[in-house]
Amino acid sequence: MKLFMTSVLMVVSMLDAYGQNHGQRHIVGVSAGMGVSAHSAPSIVDYVNVVAQPSQRVDEFTTSIEFFVAPEIQINEDWSIALEYGYHLKSYGFDNSSGLGRVEFTHRVHLPTLLLHYLMPGEAYWFKLGGGLGYHNDMFEESFSSVNRRETYRGSGIGAKVEAVGNTAFDESFYGSIGVDMRWVFGGSFKDHEGKAARYNGFSPKMGFFSAGLKFGVMILF
Image (cartoon, rainbow, N blue to C red; front, top):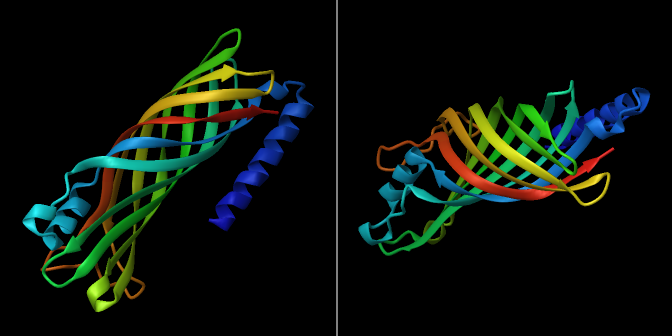
């Protein structure tokens, strides 16, 4: 995380210098914000439901939250590129009546993504259509209170994203942002630091999910 954020700051600094040297500071910016998504992780939900009692089963589609920051530069009249870092968070929890006590599952996904946007600028707005690819990491945690057990597993895989974003100007350098996106993530099994896969009653979950959501934020232009 620290390495990635340091890299983002370095990219922003270089982009700012690029904009100053070319006399076009408006083409360089950073967006940040958060959103709410409809989230489907079939393998993880199946795993949760293996542990849950019939009355506690969770639905495949639920809501999740995501935070993001993305430095961006316009490369010509019609296109820009952005390096987005997203942090996706989803938890499941219930009180198990078969002796496990409070049961909680959480997966936290780091989503660095290289994006390409098609730009449609207006008098006081930008409208962007685009998408991109990235290599993502997922930290999956499970805890069972009655046996004082807490395990952490990790998975990784490839993700793809498409989005539409509108930026409305509040002044020359400060914009509001609203967008919709869809994301697909594909990965392998969750494993601990010893290489042991997460497993309960013979079932092992795999990293992977689909999300579609609405995001709000701001964009600052240099």
